[in-house]
Length: 335
Image (tube, rainbow, N blue to C red; front, side, top):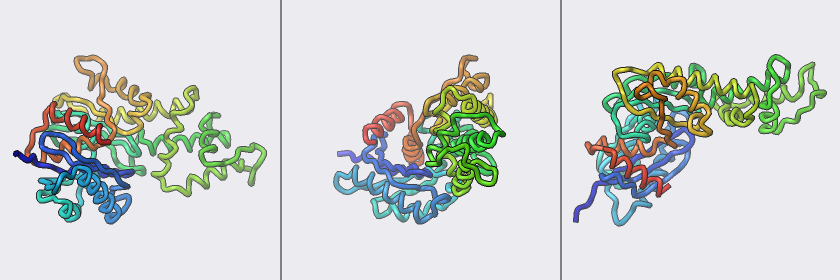
């Protein structure tokens, strides 16, 4: 009886961590999920605990007797990729790992979640925003992803900040009236009474500013969904249009006529509702539309499929269309 090699793949995110055990054919055998896995935002010990928890769940779910893992791949954000793999490797040995652990970019994992092709493009817009050109299976050029202070234009953070900015400006007359004001005050349980003022300022605005400054800047992303809520509101529509413009520029910055391939979109700003994603595609059709037609994108939920792809590729296993489809299908069944 032939025993097929098994691998551990982990997508360690800023919100949650996902893990899967996958065999060499691309069949996913066990899945696990835990908390925040980004060492930069949550600290190395908390991240290690989340990775170990998700990996343990995946291994236990795949277990039919002893499990031997021939390798592991961990997809992580930005600077986290520079963390030495041995820190994670040691945690996985007790789970049956007897091969190597590689640390990969979550941006590359997002791309490979949508395609098996080794040349193409990715645009991710969740809390942050980043675009990339992929060539010969590696990141060839990256645009934005510079964080809330220096970039992430058009991201969930950017949208949330614009929502708060518009509401504050509307409350003191600097900005146009907008339905976003009531939605935002509601979400923060702030009462609205135009007659209630403190030192000449509407009390609701004072409370809103206090609540906003009590948050870490990146936490403003929690208000991003409000921008999609009032469909007929001119201020909200302007925010979404400007977000699409920013993201289109981020993607255009990595375009290269010499690199042809699929375009993959990830992150809730691009995949939920479709308004921003459609506007971005319309804006970049000249650079990414096949044969001069409209640009199209593959939408991905997260980087889990891509992490599995990279675990197999790290072991020298070719991931073609059939293997990629098998990973996607069997993982969907496990989730």
